[in-house]
Image (cartoon, rainbow, N blue to C red; front, side, top):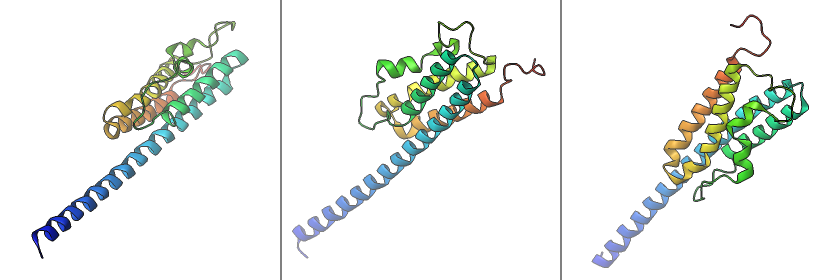
Length: 167
């Protein structure tokens, strides 16, 4: 074998190794994206449960909008190579003011303090997910997704409004 043939063979092997590493990385990214999207769907489901409990239609619609925003921000808004920014409508749907519901309603949404805290956490975590593409996606997005799951768990276990057995 000539030196040129050896160099070409080594280069071809390096290219194949590089392609294999890139395929493995893309697979890992796809798994992380799928896990984040699932965490977002679960969190949105919990927010929809909160919405269904509301006697005031205006609060139901605000919480439904928040649920849609959580699902979208944790899913299709996380775009590798993207800008990592939320549009104004999505950011509004995830704002902390969600806990006060619709400003034209007669009272606040029927949520316990623990549910309010968890709701704010869910919205903040979902809002942070698209920006993970600007840093270390494979490190940051799983941490956000796990924390999102924990916030939902905390919200589900919080004392529901109207339960007189709670302190």
